[in-house]
Amino acid sequence: MVLAWYMDDSTDDQRLKHHMTPPQYVSLATLKENTGVLYWKLNPESYETDGQLEKIKSDRGYTYTDVIQVSPDKLPNYETTIKRFFEEHIHTDEEIRFVLEGSGYFDVRDSHDKWIRIAVDVGDLLILPAGIYHRFTLDSKNYIKAMRLFIGEPVWTPFNRPADDMDARKQYIEHQKSGF
Ligand SMILES: CSCCC(=O)/C(O)=C/O
Ligand SMILES: [Fe+2]
Image 1 (cartoon, rainbow, N blue to C red):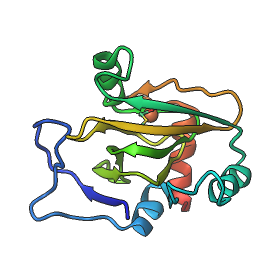
Image 2: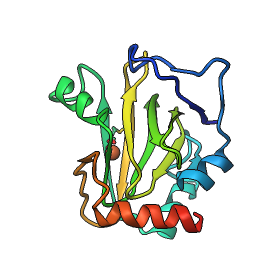
Image 3: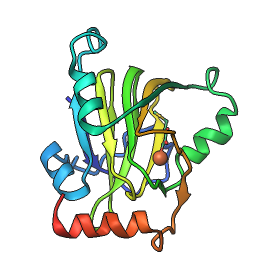
Image 4: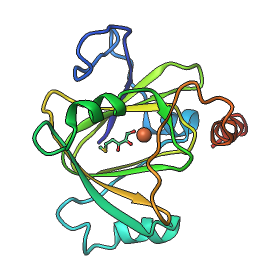
């Protein structure tokens, strides 16, 4: 099962766990209620044929898929790109990632602007809502392969914080206030 927890304030290596002392875990239900993040666990052996991924795609209108590999030797412009992933940003659309191999951390801001770290592993499908402040880092294993999904032609543009005046951010805050 995916694990999520509040992060400490340490500036140590971003690939470390950064637990609070003692650790303060966040349940999937709280994650959804507080941030709107959605999560599914799919079977990595059978997702191509068991219909689970197809159902999520058709329910949510995802028409585009591709695969990204993030590691020092697989990703072009690795140093620049990994730095960009870890800058706090929003997108104007959902960020949908299904982990095929490896692992990593998605960090999202909660309603009090605190970082929650979400540890993703093989079979995890995560949806970050449009307008949520977030960032991504590899963990100490330094490798992830993930499917990216999108409705229509993909737009990956990150808008770094501050992006509070953007419609996507304002709409996200409205959803958070009225309840996800
Ligand atoms: C595991 S996919 C790499 C991270 C990414 O695509 C992204 O947009 C982070 O915000
Ligand atoms: Fe992103």
